[in-house]
Amino acid sequence: MNVADSRRLASALEQMGYQPTRKPKEADVIVLNTCVVRQSAEDKAIGRLSSLRPLKDNNPDVVINLMGCLIGVRGNKKIQERFPWVDVVSPPSDPEPLLHFLTERTARQKAALKQSKLNALLDGELVLPRAEQGKLVSAFLPIVYGCSHACTYCIIPAKRGIEHSRPYDEILKEARELVGQGVREITLLGQIVDRYGMDLPERPTLADLLHDLHQIDGLKRIRFLTSHPNWMTDELLDAVAELPKVCPHIEVPIQAGDDDILQAMRRGYSAFDYRKLIERIRERIPGVSIATDIIVGFPGETEAQFNKTYDLLNELRMDVAHLARYSPRKGTYSERKMEDDIPDDVKMRRFRQLETLQEEIASEINARLLGQNVKVLFEELSRARWRGRTPTNKLVFVESEDNLLGQEHEVKIIWTGPWSMIGTLVKDVSD
Image (cartoon, rainbow, N blue to C red; front, side, top):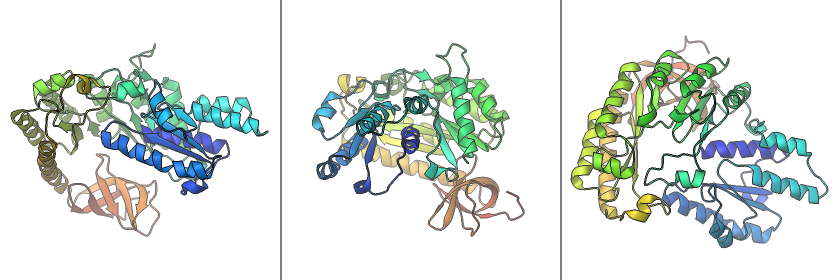
């Protein structure tokens, strides 16, 4: 979501006449887009923000914009007081404060932009930054902002606000613009992406959206994340199974394998419910890959409860498991009402146990593709090798002197590991 927000703001700035630079000392505008979902992310953002002060001291005219979850939808006066060298603060997904600031500043300097152009920018009539046109193969497209589910450990509802879906036609328009500029794969985003449209008068569904996006010429692949076990319908699963452009890859977090921990997290389902869901997904979408999220060391988690999570992961054999150690986020229910009583060394041991298990599982799953031909959409050249992904989101590297950017080719897998694979082009496959 932050990548999508940053790209949208970068697009607006380029339309105002700015160009990107890799050197902060050369910048007229510096935007720091922040994440605070974990303490480490917040600490990193604070450190980076502090490092910008010398630039401001040496060049008072540089504009520093602090954006994202560190500000939140309600603002953050303490942050503004702590970092007085910040000129503009912006809530998540909101380019308006910076655009207004720059427009007013330009007006004071006798070079005001026309208000109609600013309105167009704020109304979402944005294109990709010109520097990226033709180079960006895969793009994120937010369709649901905020979240109203309020898991006890999660700060997102407080920082990004209540759940609200973007208008249906606006999403389709932006998707067509992205494809017109060379994007070949679109990933639809939402904190609970399956709930798209539930707050709109017409009540469109994510499945409806997938069907209409599938009709866009030039679009090769469609993905969506992140799903929630309570909101994954058969209609959605059938759309994934039936539409060739929709990738057979599902991201649906479990978070824990013990029912008492799930209840304390306010996840709204049981481990049995989750097992049945995975069974249903695999039944309706043959060959599907599934990714999950797991938190270890949640307040009160006993060794026996952790072992249930370990056993569940071992049983279900997921393609990917995103692992995290619990850390209290200020303002969440768990931070206010629950004691962070699991020692750091215990959290790390449990994390490593799951990490080792998942490495074994992923190695086993990927090894089945050895010698097989798979379709790969190539996204970039990385260290003299082309980097791309299969429809099931497997990372594949290929050596080729040809320009494969944005092309989808059949590739024979010649080496597999837990996190990536290596292949060779099947030469008789056309672009």
